[in-house]
Image (cartoon, rainbow, N blue to C red):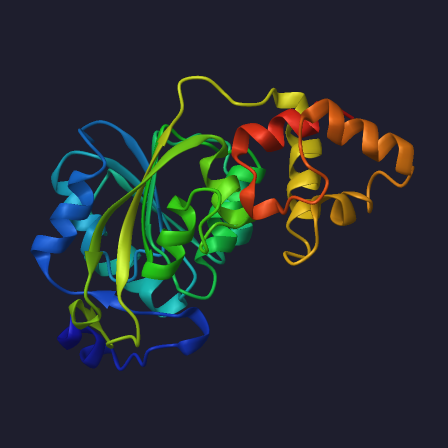
Length: 267
């Protein structure tokens, strides 16, 4: 892969947070987290030069890749997978192009840039793309936040959002030495398996997201203080908290997903 980059004269773009996973054994291990993929449709975010793409195609998957870098897109389209019928490419920013697709994939995979990984996952969930499984390589700290439970220091609104529709699990750690160029932090692989039953109804999603953002807007403040931004009547606010069985002096990081859903349904 390094020789290919040198051959084409490509420099790593810090703007896109590009770091390439080198060892084949790790790439195969990532793909194995997706289960049986033969004949399945997969969206891959940020394929780079197609290192993971080639493993998935070799296992019989149909891959639609989303690549922001024009130079890499040219290699993918014209050289790496030019004759591969099960490969297609969408060039551009995945934060914009991903949601223009009419097709719903079975799975989504990606070695996500450190600077936008959480934004991409958040958009996938909030905009309801929701495939049956997603497997991402991210900064280790981001994966720890996604898997965190209430009461822990890593627990945040992103933890709740990640776990709303998915059972989220920390799969394995990838040392920084496995990437080129080598980043300053280790990475990890997270596996997200869609829950059999949705925690909230489709019509409740917008209200839930508003409540979630409000509760975690100022972490040092109590739920009562933060919730006052959307429930301004003090008597109503007190009634809502009592009905939900939540102490007004509690803080958002101590509320479980079930607590937040119950609170949402009380006002």
